[in-house]
Image (cartoon, rainbow, N blue to C red; front, top):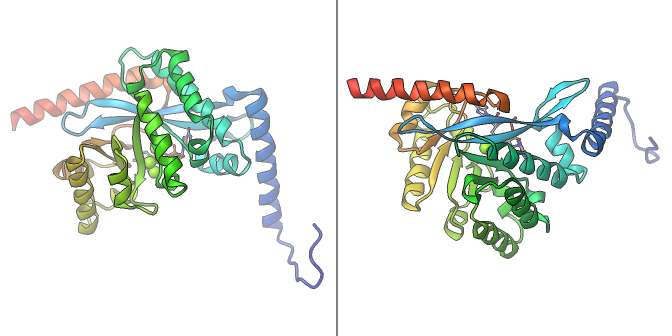
Length: 287
Ligand code: C2E
Ligand code: MG
Ligand code: MG
Ligand code: MG
């Protein structure tokens, strides 16, 4: 690489290797999207109702089954897809796939799909969502679109218009990772989200940090007053779950119930969750 004269340039073999690996991953992603979209797959993580422990739906989480690297997680390729301008295409693929798979489920549970900010701002968004629903015969109220606070930072008028058009389609809108971005209460006032997902950061240390408990309590209380569902992310322990129940959180999602799993594992997972919900109900009745 040609460096500006007079600048000291240190050769860093580690950095060079990383840059090369990144360029390779970029080439691979283009190839996969064009010629082998089946390398991208969705894994599903259940969301359960806190009161009953029964599943209300699943969140679709994308993975890339890379021919040499194995299963690649979104943190490695979503930011890359965003930078390369491929996220709109990749996101549309995930949305179509999620709707197609959910339409085939025996039980009409909800399906949540993540939208990245660029996807949200894309002029084709409404068309893409409409087609994903109608092509697969999925009832709009079964689809939840998860957006992060980053989406709301830009162009409030246009953003509000898009949110309203999505709502008019009959789909639900969730605010994902609540509390980590530039959270503003006015977001919740100006747009009626159906659900607020409390970020894992506030759940992780719930057992030891009373400030986190206070934050969770404030958010669930707000959700209740604004008629929104509150979902806690990253619930890993029974103790966290109990505390969340005590704070009147509506739903929970996390490794305590299941890690994200391939679609083929859903029937067995539902059977296990049903059994666990029954056991919990029996235990509560015996108390
Ligand atoms: P997210 O939407 O907040 O998804 C939750 C993440 O937390 C997932 O990571 C999930 O596997 C992880 N998780 C769930 N329960 C637990 C738990 O109990 N403990 C811990 N430590 N982690 C838990 P994942 O699948 O790696 O996805 C990361 C992010 O990538 C997602 O965060 C989402 O922002 C993005 N993403 C995933 N799929 C898509 C997609 O199809 N489109 C777009 N645009 N973004 C996606
Ligand atoms: Mg999400
Ligand atoms: Mg989240
Ligand atoms: Mg998150």
